[in-house]
Length: 239
Ligand code: OAD
Image 1 (spheres, rainbow, N blue to C red):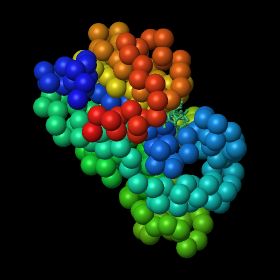
Image 2: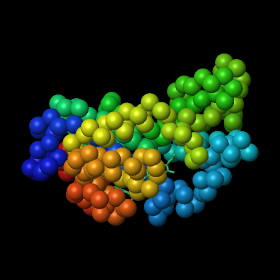
Image 3: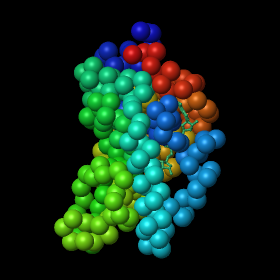
Image 4: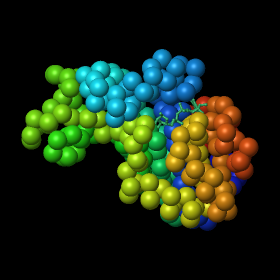
């Protein structure tokens, strides 16, 4: 195990935040959004991931989410997820994983202290009665799926463009970013706000920020260390 700032800070029980994006799940087979084969290269977010798109064509939007649920259901955590879960388990100090991912792979790898600031593909919410619950049905027998309680239209439990992030998880993430001594930023293009603000906040508050990414991002010039490469390989070496 290398003797570097990550190990030094965790050995001393310093507060740690890990922030992840789609890149952490890429080696598990989950497509990213903005990479070469990224989802936003093929699909238009405006047609599929906005409240307006859902109001206009809930069936189309659900087809897309159903396809993603089927795809993710066949994916397993990779060594990057495993490393992050192990860091949480073995670290004595404060720890929070903030993920933008909706695939649920961190939890599957054993992460428990986590906030999913963009929601979760396995959650659904009723647009009529407001009930929200976990639902792992793949595929749904009928699209769009309906609420068991009131028959209302269900929506995916994810945050769409133009919507506010869930208040409590975001507040937890902001507070943790301000307090942490080390932030590990893994596999995010760091262009979607407010989450992209978290590493800047941490840096300004004096944290040591390490970026793990296969490419440069707008964050790269601002961080203390860049670990260039695939997250599963770079972090897997530390398992
Ligand atoms: P992006 O697709 O924007 O960025 C993925 C990042 O991961 C890029 O910087 C890649 O260079 C990097 N990457 C790709 N493969 C990698 C690997 N194997 N190891 C390490 N890095 C790798 O995904 P996000 O930053 O997560 O929002 O996107 C942020 C948000 O935009 C998403 O949560 C989603 C999307 O629209 C919502 O759905 C609300």
